[in-house]
Length: 409
Image (tube, rainbow, N blue to C red; front, side):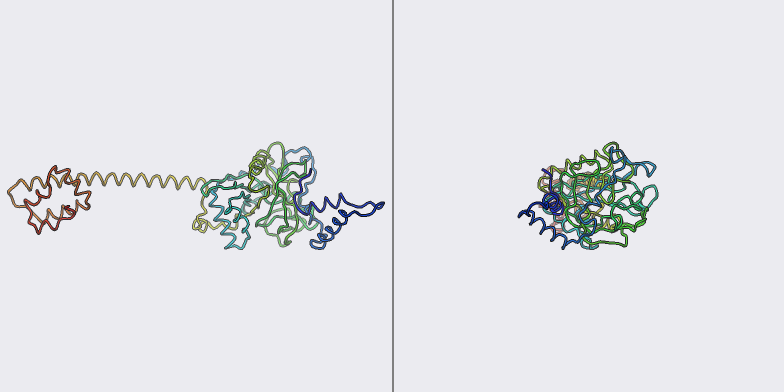
């Protein structure tokens, strides 16, 4: 049985299976399919590409046919800085973008708050993407936050592209409206078997209309992620799928006309395996697409507590451990000094109580009150003295002088 991924696909299948031959009357089921088709057409129109059959398509090149890596952009693969972030980082970031930047991530926030798994795409800075050697390479990261993850859990990235290949499709877009790029925000995706390019396999398929930008035909180089032409809530079919089935593909090329695509088959397989285990999601995932340029103010990021990368967490942990050791060393030094001061005071009391000479009462009182600052200190003094220290001090101090001493009982 084929898996139905969304209402659009259901309608199309019903329409194909229930087309009425001219030789017989229309059945009730066929009539319902026809009525549903009329309703969808009324609501969505008949613009080519709305059903998701164009932006999700891949040109069947020799590489695509054989699952070979595409390397026509030249050079080596982009070296992604694989930063791991905490779940808390994503919670704070999505709330910030939702509340301060007006980018709707309300559903993503709800998924995390209610303990469901979430997929997050991080689109690299345009300053990185626009470099000629990076223009057609996999420069972005994708994170799978598993269900019931704790705030301090670290999440590792996969290398993907969140933007299409302008270099490959810019002059020959599969959609006549122009090559599309998924805009930031939340989108519902379904996990299931689907035909994509070079075979049928399990991937994540877009399950609702999205906001999409379209580049003018002929645009072959990235200068912005926000083209002038924006189309609200279209069915684009920008799936989350794989590229080469062999070694990682260094260049995007035919693999993406708008889809979110993995460069490495091994990473894709691991992602799908992990996603399949998120049973609390029932194969339905919110995909939150974030542009790094939306929060590139380093000081702002720091103030929001977003600097939660693994390396930064390690540095903070080391700093905390160093501070703890310094504090313990300081406390140990202070304790040793206190013990020495109490021992000296006990020796002084012995000398004064056994001598017949004049005592500098004011100096003694000052020294005593400086050393004995708690009942614990007084008990330690009694122990060091080895007898009734109060009676000993009474032998060389007047009662009025004794009353000036602190913590004598």
